[in-house]
Every structure is written in C-alpha cells, then in structure tokens.
Image (cartoon, each protein chain N blue to C red):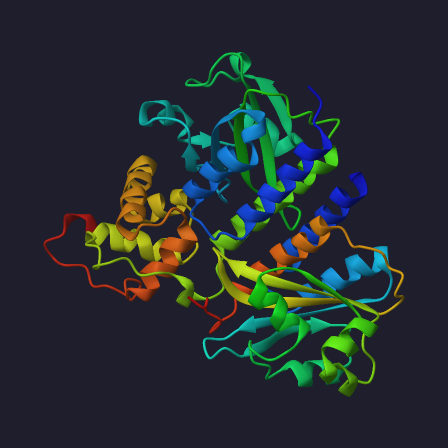
Length: 167
Length: 247
C-alpha cells in the first residue's frame, strides 16, 4: 500500500507539473515506465457528435492514433466499451484479438492495456488507454494507480476546447 | 488510533472523487471535510491564497460562521502565525488551544498544509480535525493529499479555456471603481498594487473585490477575470465625469 500511495503521489505530481502543457501523457508514461516497464498512454476526448477525438499521447505506434482518431463511442473497441460502461477494462493481446477483431489490423498491439473512462460529475468526457508493451505477466496494476491516471486525464480533458460533457 | 489500510484506501478514493467533480472552492472544502476527511472528524477547512505582495487572503472556508471567519481575514506573510510557519516550514499540526484562532473547539487539532505548484507555495489549506492525522507516520499519504489539492487549486485558478466559464444569469452591475479594479486584476496586479494605482485603502480594494466576486458568482481572481472577460467587462472604460472614484 505504501508503494502504491507513493506511486499515486508521483502520478499526481507529474500531472501537476505538466498541467497546461501538451506533455502530460509523456510525463505520466515515464512515471509508470519506471515501475512497470515500457508504457504508453493515449488520451481521447468525447465530442458532442459521439466520436472520440485524440487529445494527447505518448509511446504508441502512430497507427494507433490514426486508427482510433475517428472512432465512434458506439464502435466496438475496448476503450469505447469502457466509456460506455463507466468502468476500467483490462485487456491482453489474446483477449483483445478474440473480442475486438479490428485489433488484428494493428501491427504491434500492446501486451496489456487498461481502458480508463473519464467522467465529470457523472457524465462521460473521454477515455485513456494505458498500455504496457513489455510483458503479459505484468500482474494487476493497483486500481488506485489507474484512478490517479483518471484524475490526471480529467484535468487534461477539462482544459480542452470543444470537448464538452455528453448529457 | 492508527490509520487502517481500509481508511487509507477510503481517503485516496475520496480524494480521487473530489479531484474529478469540478466544484467551486467552497463546495470542494465541504466535500473535503465530509467525504475525504470525515474519518478524521473534520469540522472545518479553510483555503488561503498567497499573493505576490505576501498577503494571505482567505479564499474560501467551510465550517465556520461569518463572525468566526472574520479573524482569518487580512493575514500577511510578515506577521508570524501558524499560517506563515506552514508556508515557510511545511505541514504541521497544532492543538486548537495553541492555534490562537477563535471558533475552533479546544479538543481539536488544526493541521496546516502548504500547497505547492512548481516548487512555489501558492496556497495553504487548513483543516480542523478531531482525530490525529499521524502526519509523521503517514508522510507519503499526506504528501499525496497535498499534491491532489494543488491539482484541484491549479485547475480552478488557471482554467485554460475561457469558454469553460458558465455565465451567470443576467449581467451583474458594477460601479466604475469596481470595473477599474477588475481590469487591474486582469492585468495581474495584487490588491496592494491596485490600492496604490487607484489611491484606495487596501481594505477598500479587498471589500470591492469581494463584491465583484459575489456579483460574478466566483471565488477566485482567475475565475473573476475569465468570467468578466466573457461578459465584456474587461474592455477599456471611460471614466464618467460625475464619478468621484475615477479621480
């Protein structure tokens, strides 16, 4: 628990230091990489037309950003499912390929990914993909760590022009 | 009584929830007392800013009535107090009877948190609790707590997009003097600088600013500037000849 609290503190500190800059995801990824190995984070906002909009990312192959740039909230992707259901979803490559066939179109899927929905006062405002590229035997990332990532993402998204909450 | 694992998790969860509600400072303090620090029997919470002129204005509070709130106004970094000690030396806890502050029950503790942003103290959070926070034993927990509060404050003080401000119903009416003060606040001036610029007493500037905050339904200078900008109140104004405050 002590380690988790310290990691949560590091995540919030990184968010605080980079708030208002386009480097928050890079900073957050670096914090997580020190603990869990190679890591990337990609943040999407939810537009009023129901599509996701890429906001900021780090550590992902460009194909991810391009592929997910125009995804609708109602398309079948782990992230959209996470936002629709309002819960954090963990996927491995194997699971993702089985459940989401479009994953096979990507060249280098991450070993383990966490889909983290972002909400503001109960309304969805976007979602975050936290991906670990190193190994499948990562174990469970503590929920407090993912919630801290959620908080950091909330503060990035709440600053984005044009990303309004869906009623 | 030592803090249990469940209580630590409860505290973190409450903090995460608080960080994503986008509430006003007053509401944030209320939630902080009830939801996050409820397990510590929190009774009151106060947020003080730290201005460039070293004044320490009370920005918002929860749990004190109007008469109890008055002594907390008008503090200054040059005047030794528990608040200045916290800003200079870091987090500490004090038995209420030694805090010298009215309105606090004697069997409570007053805990002072300095709130940092980019290696600078930007504010101070003061909470009144009935149970020991175990500051030394739970150092990383309270450091994380401080960071979360800083994130909240920085977000509410420095919104990046003016469009995020909700315009209050009906345009508020301000005097020429208040509009002038608003413009100077928008230029980043402190209360002391405004008082010199407009040849007004420091307390007069403070009172006018409070009236402006009420009119705009905001609690911070940044929010006031953002909302005033949306309402078109920050455009240069001509002094009406009959207005004595313009001279």
